[in-house]
Length: 292
Length: 292
Image (cartoon, helix red, strand yellow):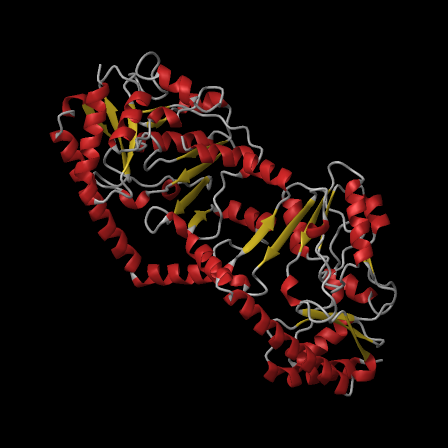
């Protein structure tokens, strides 16, 4: 998961548990077993696995919500603008008739995180509770920024910007995937979950560990984000970098994965088209150099 | 006090008590008796009374802090730029050797509340605790705004703006005080705490209630802020508009006041020089019309 989320919930005194995913999304049996009342998921594009929650699993999640009167689901749709391929899937909020889905989105991926612009869509009952308990808070977003954003949305310029930017990002993704496929390391690489959002996952067939490959990457000029960094042990403790690295590619698979291949979260938000060949070459060099 | 503050602390689960003021600032005996560990005060210019905490009381407050190892003081210096007359008094944070004063300030009064810019200066021990427990939070202020503010401060333009704006506000205050002194209602008016900040208090000698004067003010085109609106009963409940009004100017004085005169919080942040005569005339008309 996204470590900052756990920190935020923990700082409010919540008892935070991590629930494994399978290919369809969050594991409903494990969710049930966790005893949680509130689930925070990223169904459009889970971070870090990139998995898209299936329609079937979405209905199962709504069924889980219906199973308890104080159950809520936070639908964190942080990069919803960047579905790159495949059919769009309805958001949980749009098919929720229980009023238990809290939809949150951000402009951090589409306009830039430096702007600190995000939003929350509460179901009516919770909106009333929010107004009563916390409505006295002023928005932390300055009025000038709010007005600029409103004009951008109303004029259609935001939609045009997103369309242009999505196309541009898709081209970078395509170029990077093509470069990796043409690289000498290609037989060792497989790409996972590249249809949505601004990152995909790269799995490497090797006897080396994530840490070894990441260190080699740094020497060649590419900073890799090992999947194990985002893994969380069953007891809620974050994966230990040293211990986590030692285990990966050797013994136990990470939660949600059947194999022990090293994996990297390949974010291409900020990658320029010009940098793609260099990035691919550095990655291939790091993989081949450490391959066992 | 400032009602939103109580709401914020209460929303974090704090048990909020209100402690009366006297002319020198917060009542230390009452603070002791409240059992509080954390006190939030506005020593430069208390809202709504406008009172400035005396140097003596500041040292007594530091003495109170020293009396318990987990006592903290929040020095809310929301309009520190606007000392209009008299000698500057050192902030509590500047004379705190215990490391127990949390200094907070804002650019809302000097640049505009629409920008949502504020800051907090933590003593070193608390800064370390903050970093450990909450350091993962991103600032809610956009980076562009932060850079603009930094340039404004570094260039000296902020200081020049504040000096200009303070002079301009002082002229508006002086014009308003002169207009009130020259108005037919003058014998009934007394001005309190006009040396600092962007509001003063106007007390009215009359048999009318605050509510009656405020209603008359509205008819004449001026919206008055009755002092009783900011009063808080001993049990922590906010003053009831209807009940509060009925009592004021008739029976019990508000906390911190010896008399039962109606009082109004006269904010002149947004008052233009051109509007001063109209404002003064409307106020005088409201006072004279309701005088008993």
